[in-house]
Image (cartoon, rainbow, N blue to C red):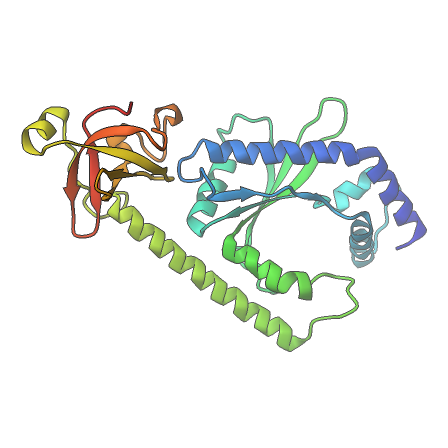
Length: 305
């Protein structure tokens, strides 16, 4: 790194690092708010990482290479951010591609009410990098009143995509390392990327099958009974709420039989849930029971108490 580049990078970090950290916190809060408002993404289905400010030595090396490739130079510290747009990086890891797509759609919604804006999108899930890297990136612009806005690179990865980064990218493709990857390592990395992508597909099939059992896919949902119908046709039983999931509630009766309560039977939907209306573990509920070949359903006939 030339002395000039080093000095400009140091100056940029001294002036702006506290603002960068504030921007990172803002983006993390934005992602967490989007997840908390969606039943599909709530709970532990999306993990928002702490994020990072790029090490200044790495930022300097990246800037030096970029300027050399373009046969260009910079003269002011403010240009560091313009050249190295991933100085501030955030990350969210989703269980499967279904959650990744849902979060992507929420964050790129043009009707989003936050004051953040999406400056650029990079879909490496649809078009993987030559190295095999997959993921979806958003460049988020975070405005500030008294100083220039900050660009934050937000990476949305599935668990499998993040695993590839841990197993391959961090060891093979970080520039500036003394040990360089060879052609065989690079081929194996691409193979690993494809295998993990297939694992993502299988995980999606499993999730879709569970959704079908819950009446969320193409399968016919269990019948919904009114209070009068339930009382007339099937005797009611009391169950205890055991667990809340992103698309259903798990309950058990007094003899230990477990059953699923679909959100719509509580007057809710995964896309538009009323979080305050959710029962809590330990709540009692009066239900009727309806069984298919694959699933036992509890259908509420009284509100939780």
